[in-house]
Image 1 (cartoon, helix red, strand yellow):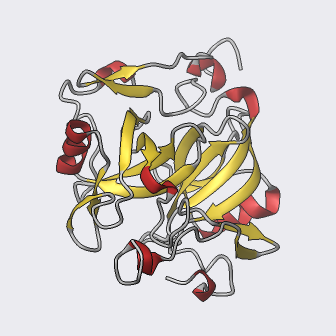
Image 2 (cartoon, helix red, strand yellow):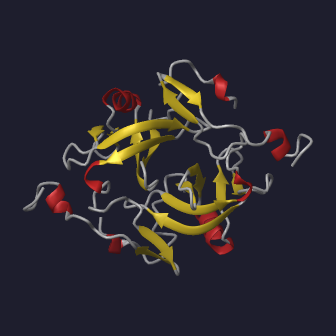
Image 3 (cartoon, helix red, strand yellow):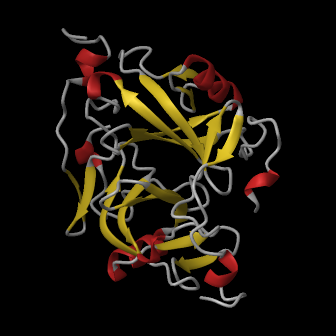
Length: 138
Length: 138
């Protein structure tokens, strides 16, 4: 429980789950808004620190995912934090393009519970087809 | 992928994992600080909405955990949000007592990566022994 009892190797101090992953929250510097939650493995976390840009592990594609590699919407990392149980990481980031979500919204938490329904409360800022090169833009 | 394709039952719209759980981020109203990450099952989420106070599922104790039941540090819930993949929930809360972490700190993300080490950067506001009734206080 003590904060001083972490292993000296900062990568091994993280409590990796049975898949070797840890959930990561990306929070926007300045606004404090939560942009997204994704996953990292050891390599993604190491690369995030080395490059200064968020690198995640894509569970669906089963490969490293340099955030913004397709969309250009990279995340510049200003700080990394670890929680008391060492099983969640918090990134303080600047979001390039102002769009973190694959739906073209500022962030992924665009649905709010209102009267027993999840209601979309945030606008699409850019057509995903344009972001990901299948349309006319991006 | 469309936001309109969620099931009409708001509880079933959440993508519960193989254990029937979903990770939940508690963010402080006003400051925007991330207080903690915990887990909910259907019952915890239903009770959170009904009571207006955060109710989690304790994985270690395998039971419902009314946040603050021991410490008095309840979380009053102002909003619930769901992410694009419907597999993470974000709570906007007011933190009673100003302490969310079991270590007696304001929040659980009190370690920051500095020079290859996780350094404790936030103070203990109250002795955990006092919070949890094993000491003189509480």
